[in-house]
Image (cartoon, rainbow, N blue to C red; front, side, top):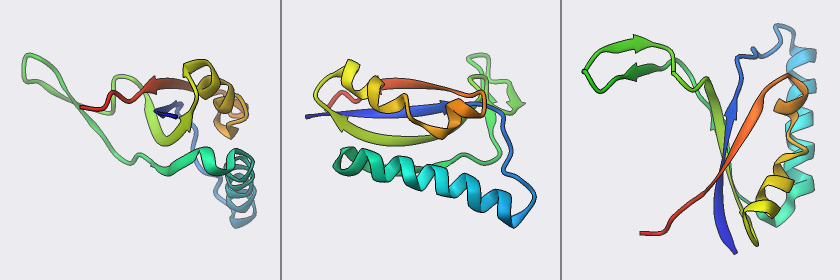
Length: 104
């Protein structure tokens, strides 16, 4: 099995109400349960960011609109991408970059 990072892109915010937050977390937990042993690290959302450019300038936010990550194992890149299709961020208008981790 090969390891892949799922990089989440989107600018969605967590709902303000406890009920809304519970609903979002339930969707993520259900998806992780569906993935089962493929999940290596459920990951985390990202907080406040800065982007550092090659000229040394620093700007608020992140250029790629990254919002979080998870780590999974799959037989190949296509299988890893198929796992990502059920991710709740897609329903919120986000997207996912699936990248193979190269062991060094």
